[in-house]
Image (tube, rainbow, N blue to C red; front, side, top):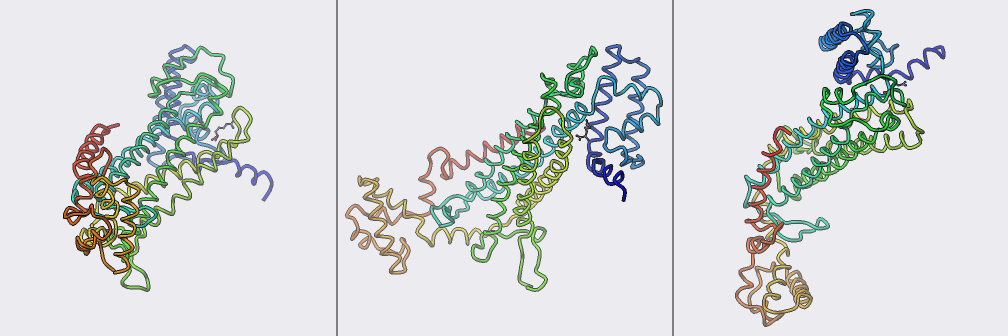
Length: 451
Ligand code: ARG
C-alpha cells in the first residue's frame, strides 16, 4: 500500500460523522436562506440549494446516498452530492462559512437533540423508581452503611434516593444542553467573515437561544461536549451503583428481589443459576463512559487556538456514550418495571439483626440520659445479646433493667415499624414523609413531561 492510500484513509471520518447528516442539512438550509435574505446570493439560488438539500436528505434516508470516503466527512459528501443534483448554485452554499464553524454547529445541534432523547428515557427510569416506591409503600428493609445492616428503612425511601440522584443528572443534562445552545455559524475558519450576515436570524431559525461572541473560541470550543460527558459519567456512575444493589439483592445471600427472566440469563453449565447479566453489563459499561470523558479531555488539553484536526476525535466517543447511556437507561426502565420483591425476606433481614440499637439508645435519651451514656449502655446490651445468641426482642424487661433503671415496658414496644415512624424529620424514612416524597416525585415528573 502506497503512502497516499495510507494517509488518505487515516483522516476519513465519514463512517461515523454521517450520523450528523440531519443537523448538517438543517444548518446548510438555514445558512442558504440567510445568505439570500442578506442579498449575498440570489433567492433562486437559495431555493435550488434548499430543494436540493431536501433531496439529499431523502436519498440518505432511503439509503440511496453515494457515501464517498475519499470526500472524508459528512460536510463534503453532502455538498458534493448537492452539486451533482443542482449544479452551479451548490457552489455558493459554502459562501461565508468554513467547515470549522459548520462542524461546531452540527455537533451543537446534535448534542441538543441527543440530550432531549436522553432526558425522556431518564424520565422513564425515574418514573419506574417512583412506581416501585408507590406500589410498595409499607415494605421494610435494613438500610446499610459499610454494607452492614444499620437501621430499618422503607424500601420506598431507598428507591427515592435514586430518584434524587437521577433528578440531579437530569439537571446536569439540562445544563449541558444550555451550554450547547450557542450558535457558532458566522465565525468562519476562526476570525469571523467579511459578509453582512444575520447570525441572529440563523440562530432563531435553528432553535438556538443565542449566538457565540468570540469567533476564535467558537471554532475551538468543545466544552459543551465535556459537559455532556461529565453529566453522562455521573449518570452512568449512579446507574452502576443501582446495578450493584440489584446484583447483591438478587443473590441467594440477600434474596430481597427477583429480577424478571427478561433481564437474567441461565448458566451454560449450572442449571440453577439466574445471573443478573443486564445489571452486570450496565455496571461494566460505566468504564467506557468514563473513558470517553477522559479521552476528550486528553485530546483537547494541548491544543493551541483555534481549530485543530485533533478535534475530529470528539465524535466517536460522544456517539458511543450517547448509545451506551441510551441503551442502559432503557434496560433500567424495563428491569425496574419488572422487579419483584421478596417482602418477607426484607422484613426478616431488618428484624433479625441489631438494627434497633440506635432506637434503644434514643429511648434512654427520651428518659433523660445523655446520648453518649445511652450509646455505651446499648453497646454492652448488644454484646450481652450477641453472646447469648439473642435478638433485642428476645430480652426480658428484667434483662434490660440490669443495664439501666431507666428501661421500662416501653422498650419492649420498639420495633422496626416504630423505628421507621419515629423518623418523621423532613428527609427521613418516616412513612408520612416518604408518602409526601412520592407525591412530590410524581408531580415533578408530570411537570417535566414534554421537556
Ligand atoms: N471532519 C472535521 C471535524 O470533524 C470537519 C472540520 C474540518 N475542518 C478542517 N479545517 N479540516 O473536525
